[in-house]
Image (tube, rainbow, N blue to C red; front, side, top):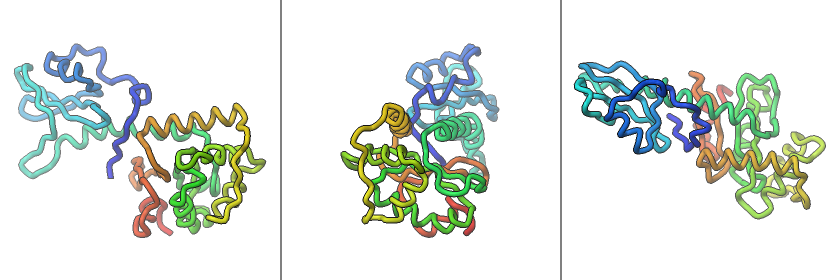
Length: 250
């Protein structure tokens, strides 16, 4: 499952190809909004360019005469996609690394052992029943020390969601407060914070900004590294048969 997420250009960073004088056809694609990320080898005199356009990776192939450009994936006689590897390396891997770094810098509440071998970031709303469902699903992995969930608290479901997230962050022990809230489920007595301190308001604003930059509109939004170390995303509580893909072997 490949991750494709909306990002601001600031998050994506500076294009890899910038000092080079780009051929005119590539410049025309760039003028339409594509960000050229790098060059790669291509067969039969073609020159490959990897680009990011409207939150997707594009393979551009400049013809040998330098006058035309083909846009799209290139396949060989065996049906192998020759564009996949360079696009992963030049576009998706840097994009995913940037996202993971941004997730690490958010304000989150730890759920599980800090030394757990697997870490997942979860955008969570205190009023979200599916966030609560995923919290329940993950208990065997969290309680066995195999996984730490890092709940990035936001407020998007109800009018009091943000104030409830603030209440959790303002608690003397946020991890314990979150556990009490999630364990109670529908019976939770978590009260929204009447007045949100400026520092917590800023933390929540940062979380909400990243949520919007990533194009997320619902919770839970779960980010994890697969067995190859590539970042993946799961939107919503996963189906039971998907849990090991996110959380590892039980």
